[in-house]
Image (cartoon, rainbow, N blue to C red; front, top):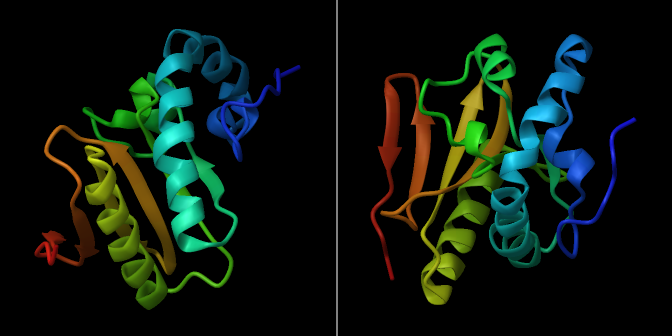
Length: 156
């Protein structure tokens, strides 16, 4: 059984480690333990603040990933998911346009607060989500395109 403790005002441990790959669920939970602090900070600051800024619930599609899970889902070798420093989230009614607009608001809020957190608007295989990750150079907004990622210019 996966423990379900609250990591922040709006997010639970179970959300941050869940996977649809049942064969890796236990390994993912066990390997997440050293990264609970990172996930807690991500939830308390980045995700809670994004939720407040957007004004809608955020649903975590992918949080922490152990190496095996990261490989299975096609994650990058340097994925911050493997350190508990990234999460992919959606919100009700998300479209590419709303993701970009809300992503801008979230990045502006992170800039106000001095947070080093990037927001990436992902648009792959007909699905749209926000990838939120700690990055020393953040806050920045990136948008995925067919040719890669494009950084939006800061307007603040």
